[in-house]
Amino acid sequence: MKASEGHIGRVFVLRLEDGDVVPDCIERFAEEKNIIVGAGCPGWRHGSGQVVVGPRDSKEMPPEPMHLPVDGAHEVVGVRYIAPGQGTTSRCSHIHAALGRSGQTLTGCLRRGVTTWLVGEAIICEIADAHVARLLDQKSGFELMEI
Figure 1 (cartoon, helix red, strand yellow):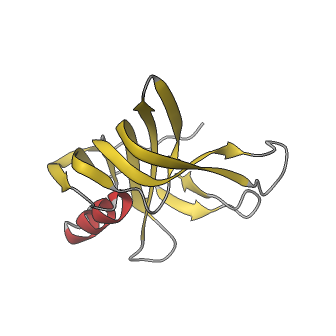
Figure 2 (cartoon, rainbow, N blue to C red):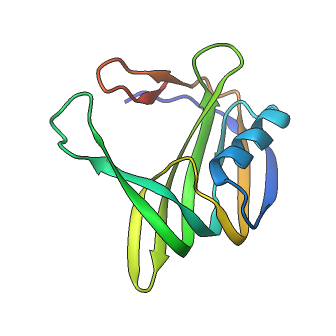
Figure 3 (cartoon, rainbow, N blue to C red):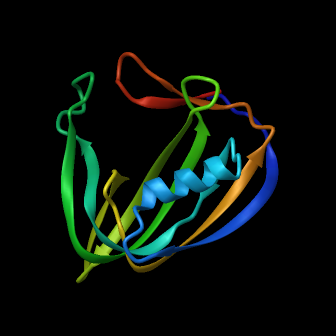
């Protein structure tokens, strides 16, 4: 295990509007506010998009992701992580969420195209002085957190 200590910097509260593309608007906000490392706790009603629910075969490298469509409005709670990526100005973010509808829950990694239905809320906590980055791992093909 590796670790890096930081401290809470700024805290932001966001309201997402109907039709906002969730990953894009949070990433754009982080860039506008120059949030280098942060974690978010989004909660919103979800309209459409896809979720990655795991690799088809966990022994295969690089893994083949399984994408499931998300149709209709869902209640969603998730955690998003923002960190520097490859290059000096890029940011990477990663969001895992649980989506519920009609007594069923779908949990996975949200992908582009996930939109807000009606309204969404997010809290972003900036983590100052943490020395982390999300870098491409050649074996898995994933951008993994490096300390």
